[in-house]
Image (cartoon, rainbow, N blue to C red; front, side):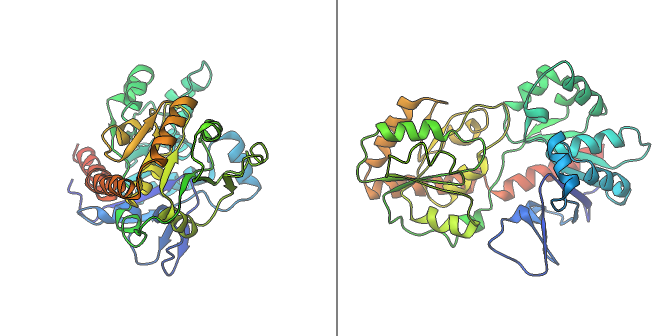
Length: 360
């Protein structure tokens, strides 16, 4: 089957804003703009028709779904409408598992491609949940992961899925993050961003030890440690902010730090690649999620998980670099992301996978 004028139904595990006009304060995955192609699908060689069923607005039922950690109403809607499309693409197991379970009993169904970001069940293996997941996925949908190490997880625990699992590196919107936001750094600030799955404790402890009197650490997205480190005036905390405000802060900082715990799935990649696209030197924890993206990055220092000493040393090294050295590191990172991890590459590889299975 030729991949021409494909009809794709996309079911993400987040809310997508439906807009009549574009809003640059929202990132591409979070907006569906009338008469504009959606997210990375716009880079498909053969432009598909993409429709989106998101998780919907917050209400009492959504609270129930959050507690059980699976979406019900969204996959049911997708199941009812499935045969209008050539491909159903789910993003996240919270949506994809239920949809796949429903279609496993159906005689007619389109190709199902599931982006598994969270390791199916947080990469947990136990006697109750794992057999249920295996049953739901017994018909083996096509799986795409953003961390190559996840393939070993599939090989060991889900061998039937391993045969149809593919590593596709995440790609950032380089036109946006590598374009209008690119300006010279002007502040002696190390920036760290995130509201979940960040090891800010290790970062703050390392910062207290580091000899960097003329620098400040700014943590954006999570202010839960603000009270604990109130005696350290060089650390500034703030909660979640709009993407446009975050970009303005990022473009002025000297470097970006991404401290991460270790999990067997994908997280933190978006922050890393967006910061590199904005020509920022970086300090990043090497984990299952990040290894594919940072091991060959030219303007980046790596640390091991929960290693305060290594983080302290990297902070001191970064803050002792000259403005010109920081600029050169950032520019190398920007070129690296453009050539290896941009949205077009992610779209190209995803399209090839879809075409491959449709032709079967």
